[in-house]
Image (cartoon, rainbow, N blue to C red; front, top):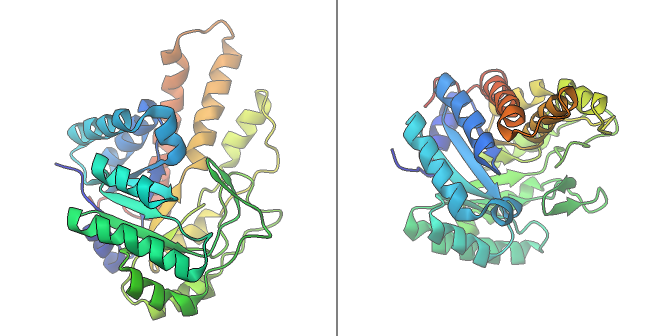
Length: 309
């Protein structure tokens, strides 16, 4: 099975009331953990690569690892660029074999965002590549994304129809209270479901995306802190809120920090238990298993896309 884009994935997800996990990948073990979990649960997948991951791992290596995952799983998998910030970056990924790209013009004015997004769409569409745009800005820090709370802004529902119509995007990332990174909230998370409902009324049947949707599993925070880390107080989005969003118009939920925390926790634990361990296989194997477990949990309990491949 070749790589697919997100068009049919999202159509089915919207109609049946579930979301597809978009998991960020950086190396072989992360890809293996994610795809093994998806194969077990027969779930469709979006594997997404940030600009930082491209610099770290090299786009060619990541593409070949994803192709290997397709051979091993025979699942519908889309390869997606996460937070592309320029036409040139999106074009490079499209030309390199990605089947979906996100152009993030949320830091621009409304008109500038439309112009940039439309430019990417016009290049992507003839090449059968789907495009995700963004309206509104999420706070937080993750890879090259760094937005302070003062610059964050909720999506304005009154802008979404014009944006989608003029750009031709296939999906839209909106800001309703999620945040990038592990340190999301000082208090309890409060997602603006009223904004989501209004957006879905204005864009009936149109797939919506949530970024910054890791739940920051306390188990992994505790392990990291017990083994030399210092991330006390990290909080994420409660999973029941994400599950509710997945039954509404949200068809894609981005998950990155939970994978990083799971991997880091198990590596720290393994090296602390055996300080003389210098075999990467012995500390990367439990890290890969932890990613598999957390992705399987997300697929079944949060996304609801198990059995939907």
